[in-house]
Image (cartoon, rainbow, N blue to C red; front, side, top):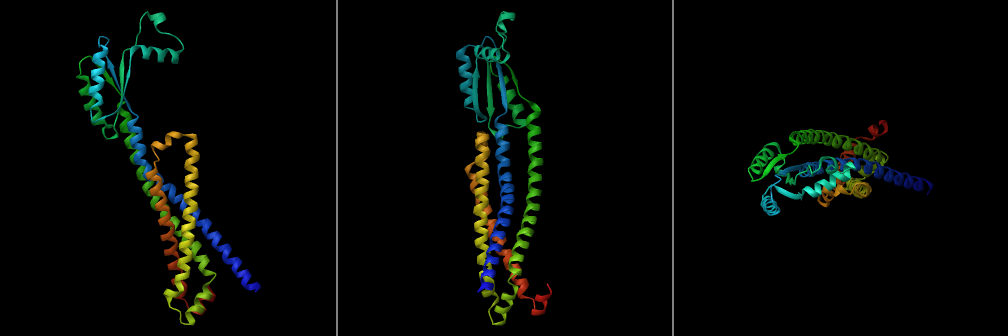
Length: 291
């Protein structure tokens, strides 16, 4: 009775240990999957926050400015458009500098402007050059300015980051498989003589493997649920600090990451259990004592 209780306690401890180790590995895998999925959203968010400033002539009337705004809003490349009058620009700069420029200049030095934000597909060097040229052709548009090198730098850096994440994901998958495989192997190792006894009484390999694989799947599901809980908790904590994260990490990415973590948890643990049990099934009694 005491031996059975000790064995049950040991197996329970192994179950908990394997579940925790698998959870930690799945958290890392989940972070990698989430990072790869949100890379495109991050690129789009950065591109769509690029501001193209359209400076208007002093002699442009309010009616002409409204007509230009209506025309630009109908363009396929426009995501958002904001009109800033001379008076509004003066007010904003006065608040920012703490002094009114008209006091020493005698007049308002600012011009009315349009702040144009583009859809992500148009936020690249070639499209920006074409868009700026088209807007400059509009009557009473004095100039169009934007950070020319910003998009090229953003695109280059995001490509490098995406490649790095891909390489890291492959390495993490390999490391994760190795860690979970070792954990499962240790769990099966403690019951290698039970496996051998079942084999001696004529049990088929499939019958012997079944309970080990079922237990591994249960561990995989529990570990995946724990990993998803930790990841969602981390995202919520990050959201409380930076609400703008919802522009990059959407429900779609969270759902795909959760499904991937669950799939990884089930497949890796079940496959590792299958390999480990087969390894001990192939061994003779003498070999079991030597390992």
